[in-house]
Image (tube, rainbow, N blue to C red; front, side):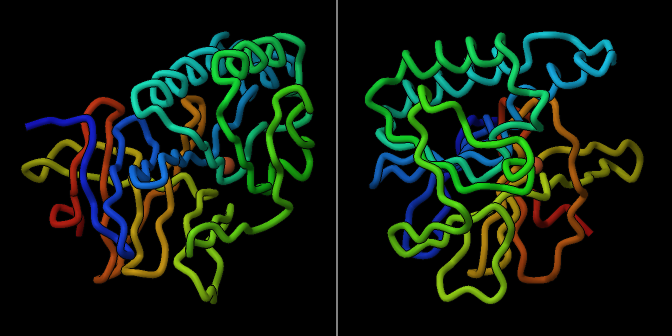
Length: 224
Ligand SMILES: [Fe+2]
């Protein structure tokens, strides 16, 4: 049976993992995403690579629907807000400004990722509070990369985890996934549509929750 969210108890919190590649903390009404890479397709086009327009608009629309569906009061972005400096086009600015106007009361926190260091921070009118590296929140270490060692369980992004699944030993699917490393860390899939991924090779204590963007399920037992 397919479903668009999955309840997952981890580190004392009843999380909801959302098929649209976001992590939801119902008790704190807080939504987490990682690696939106806003403006990536715009940066490709500025380099003469003919990729389709609209990825940032579509991703902002998906994000708006998540915010409205959950009634989130806080959004935490775990790094890589922009893809690079060329992502900061006037059209991307307009899309993000329109998105922000739709959620004026939303508190938005960004933990800088490796792409942010080169791309620069979000424009001031987007009202995003920027954390230079990791940010400790409610007993969790919010970071772009997995922090080792960390005195708190880590919520991170950066690697864009995905999982390969074979069905009846034949076709292979690769799907974005949430990657729980025991009680130590949770790495979110990249929120951005126009991003690559890294295939996880899980260890025994890991748990992988895969999503196709519409339905989400625990696939740990099907991964070698
Ligand atoms: Fe990234």
